[in-house]
View: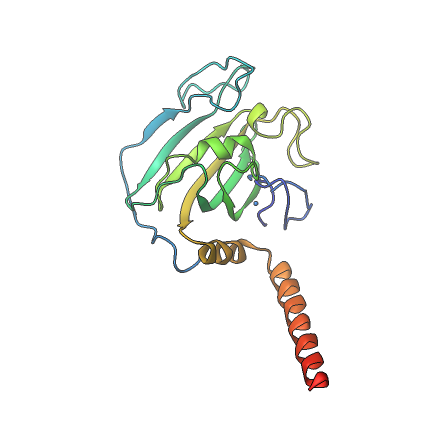
Length: 215
């Protein structure tokens, strides 16, 4: 399986979809070293900041309802990271995840993805739900349809109106452009890595060949 649901783009599953998000639109060295420690489970509810057009009903993680049309996003930290790196809007993060349908617990995608929080590269439930995580931390997200794939769903894998659950681990936060590129490469489909390396090699070859001809 590969990462493609989270982002609204890329992919490596048996049935490729244009999602990657995971989450929805999708560990390198140089990152903040993941280091986490177990702690008492903490239940949280994320105050809605993105959806302002509707008044969403707030409830606890354990009371999450798949039948309530006004149910909002909720999460539970199962492991608190101990590093100084904290996910926030504008940060380039790398997240390992497993996504499943809450209705039947069917896993529809799992993998690792790197993206910038708040850039609408992933589903809204991710952009909101990962805020505040520390590197090395683990969090379970429960995401209602309006913050995921809505009534249309995603291909044959995620039905319309589906409530999703994601088990997430914050693997790293890039601190500069080089680390961002390394993170993207580490999360990329191997076939795409080969393609880009092939293209880059071909360009370098042509340039060197041209220079030798000119000389």
